[in-house]
Length: 284
Image (cartoon, rainbow, N blue to C red; front, top):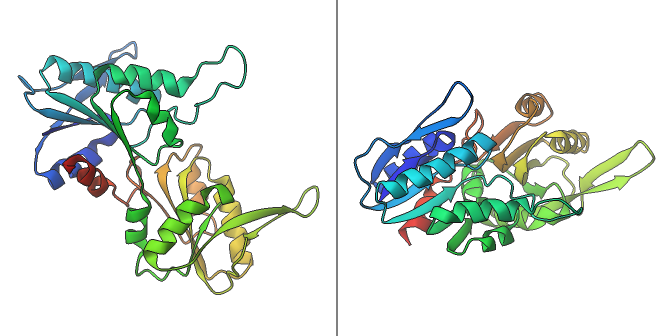
């Protein structure tokens, strides 16, 4: 097996190759003066099963993925597995107005042109992967998040809403602590109360878990409300730290005691690794 790392997932790809004790090749990627992507794999041939580790977000990474796929095929890869830690466009899975594309389906169709298997992590909607005609697996990061926080004094795991309550329960069960979800209650035209549906947080160390954080606004508001309700500390962990518009600065400057994410998107707080999960899936 040969691991080929794209520019968006260098550290994760290297770690994965180390765990599997297999050859690692970093795809060279740069841009021409007009902004077009140039990619090259420095190898004479790839007469082996090839695993490409690369996000499809942002758009430049998606184009790079297409080019790496073609490069490994031309070099003779026996099979091509795509490990897409963060699948861009997965949230655009529906057509709401006439004239709109079904973007998630389009991306899957194009990626499937050179692909024998797909592995994702906490994709926004797992049904999107059914657009791939090949074998596909979505791995859940709850296990590695729970392992990271186990023994760190967490008393309660919360999800930001009832829709993500299953993730909080999974993390909580693995840690051996209870879980709950946050409810929003509108008290007036300008005032909203945010509190756990069941548990009292007074004196408790709370962990909020979510699949992704983009702007961080909801989490900042929730952390402040929980601290006002007497929580001893509030930490947050997500799978995908998208963190747009200075979200990391906003989160770290809030009432949160810790801000962490998995290394599906590599940034300054991506300290929870999913490499072991991916390695286990590739060994199957």
